[in-house]
Length: 502
Image (cartoon, rainbow, N blue to C red; front, side):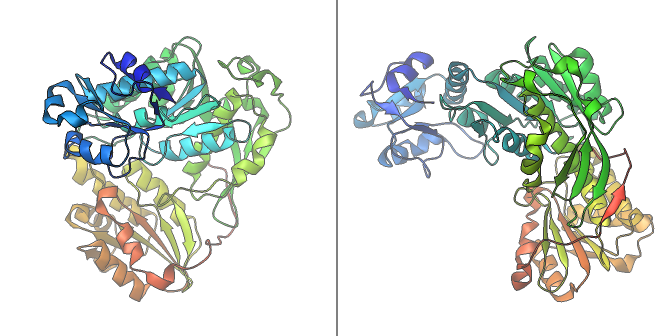
């Protein structure tokens, strides 16, 4: 969103810098990446203070910098004409972002959930992009720093915004929702994540519900019908609700699942899953009234794991509210791909198959990927698992439960990385995996070197851990074995309605 410096000063209630009519071409909180013509916000992070980098940002061509009023005197007189002094620089960033969102005024979709929110956001943006200009937040720009920067990228010709909202504690979703003012709120699920900061999973659910509380009467909530806690959100939605899932009572329902020849999924979107009462009712959803219910639509999703079908159903629900006919989305769904380190399936040159899902992890997400890998054909199934972080006092028990699931699903080998993952091996051994099949590695690099020596044709190996475990370094050690094509799996029918809500 383009502003003049004088406009920004007016929004923030401070004196404008010189020259006041200078246009602002972008916004940054990182002096290393700031570009000429951008406005630099000197925010205070956990480790760094942006005020220490104002000079660098101005030298790089920043048109001005937003600083704390109490720090203005720290800068030389020659730089003060380029400063906007405010009481709180982070609050100023958020205030300007909220102003930009409201001036833009278009329909905005907000996605949250314990698992799958990034994938669902990317899917929804891709489907909407078939019919309109869409802006989504990139990378991990989904928190109290990143979301404002994302909202400030809205342009007058943007026709829809799709943004994920992340949290690690109570009140954070409420803040982000107030900034985004969503017309559609998607909740993918609620699970045992961030337990270090919450008393239990019910407390996590209450924090996720903050997004629903922020909705207006004309807004829509898109809720996972297969998650009991999320389903209960529908009882207190200020506006209207649309449910998705595999349950019989889901409005947007997936049926007749088939694991196809590439480990992805074919599924049917049943026509009766689209209630007539919802047509044309979405706020600012041009063309919604033109969606006609016809024959069930068959989709192909080239992504491993049944949980990704659930994510696709959430995205199709969003498309429904924007009036895009299901038949017009078949090609778009077929072109969806996982993000980097989010369930990528790669055939190695030695005939083994790797599933790289080490962007992040938690017990529900890990169980979903274990089931996905167990469904793939192979001679040996190997789980390379690192720690799952922020699980609080239940961490050891939750790790052990996941280890038990490794044994229950019949994995041939378990490789744990780091001391924090020892409980996974303990749980696997208790459930019957022989001790000789549990291999402990101190570092990801050590695990990768072992795999490079021992992987053979027909093996299927899963890499899964929280981001801080850096398990991608094990993948990096595979060297020339990493060059290959996507794994081919045997077609398999699955009619089960019990799908992990990840």
